[in-house]
Length: 114
Image 1 (cartoon, rainbow, N blue to C red):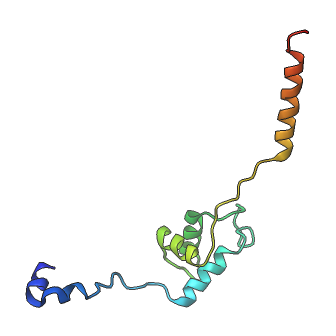
Image 2: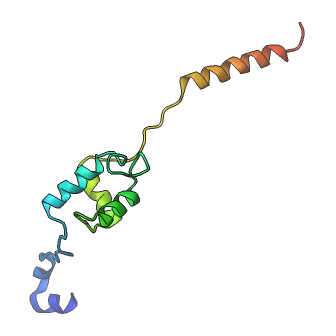
């Protein structure tokens, strides 16, 4: 970088390095996304949800169409396409009501006599 800047000056900063060439084509991207939105049980797996690690292992071990993709690249590809494997977490209302009812009974049982 220093030698280039000595030769051509500040114009060396305008050039883009480019990075590693892309290994997956658009058709492979579509195949990865289609696999990610398919239930694992349909593909013969014994689990019900994909994780990034399980999906990457499945794609690399696929006999008919192996796709070698790293976990971080896979995560970024799925994020660009709007796919997330995170479950939504909700509170169970019935459990909260039961806990409040039990707390109410305990409070009235152990309250000092009037």
